[in-house]
Image (cartoon, rainbow, N blue to C red; front, side, top):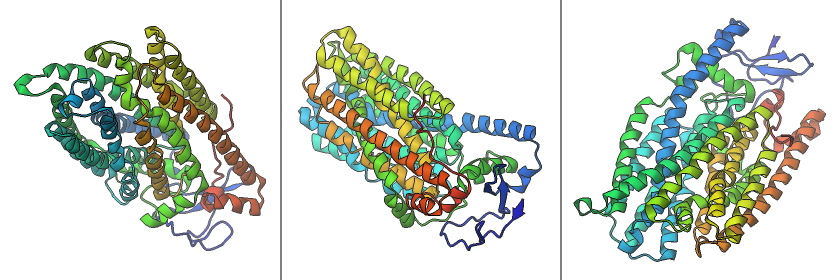
Length: 517
């Protein structure tokens, strides 16, 4: 094992990249046994540990991370979805009549949230990389959006509702891409899939719990002369403010500065990320605008954005799910209760979907499976009025329509590993532009119970999604063949697609798209 100067690569060439490692760890190159030399930045504190000691320390570290980080992020995501989706529940309890709205105006009230939510994700996720305490940044947004949600109870007109919803979307823009970035700063790729699935599991339980909570809160209709839908916003918004403030005190920051870890645990947490991608959070210095430009130059970003647009179009059913369930013919309270089982089932199946993805190291066939099942589920309510058959499709639709998004964000975090600021920018771009589907999709959900226009459009989205995904698979497998060839000209072509020299030195490859179950 031979040490080389930290400002040179293994060929003795000076490193001029703007990404600088600020650690004082010795940079070595080690042979992996196949004749390929890889970067070794392992901290001195870890080099003296035996394999058993390292494994025990890593198990302890991961257990501590899972017990602290995942519950906090999951709870915040539940609050995020409850506050975003409670307008759908309010529709069943008279908000349209009280504010004199027609169906198109209600669709506009739903979609206008995304007018603020989508574009502000990009600057927010660029800014979060500059904060030493990203957890405090996220929790501050939670408290603010909770207050805005509670204030929705005071609106007296359609225009006031539009204004509040637009502002609410702008503040909520902080959370989802920020949470994905935050988790990717703590978990390496072999663990990230199930943790990202945890976000979506929390989302589904938030939807399920939100429906049940709404059914209970709406029983307060008329108490103190306040409409039931106004109580819904007051109680759920106030709860978000209080819980967000508590989480701000408990949420750890980056691995390198987390106060809940001792120094040895910090070194291991940083090394777990650094060893697979070349540099750890807190050890890179890339300007905000430069990182945004790097994301825009990467062709993978555009393919992932387009696939997410198609997937978000399918996932738009969540914005109208209470109304879809109500088309079965039950009253408002029973309809809200019936929204819970599909979301609970989705949460359970998300875990198994992600578990299988990690176990078999694949995403491509799983996404295709979800897309195919979703198409069948769209056809059922279009072709029959049977309550049993239609509710069966509603049981499956949340997991089959939204499930691919878990695997898409997992793909992004694996395929755009470095630098971290670029990954954060790409995450925001993917979710922001992809989420525009929620705007136009809001105007599709009319003419119950068959919803021909909505479900027909979602089938088209599914087909285009599958075709684009197959092209993406071909593209990344071609890049892997170039990396495997050892040909310098071919490797330079791969680097133009967003792979850094350091990642090449580490033996990095595009993963999860070889196609096997």
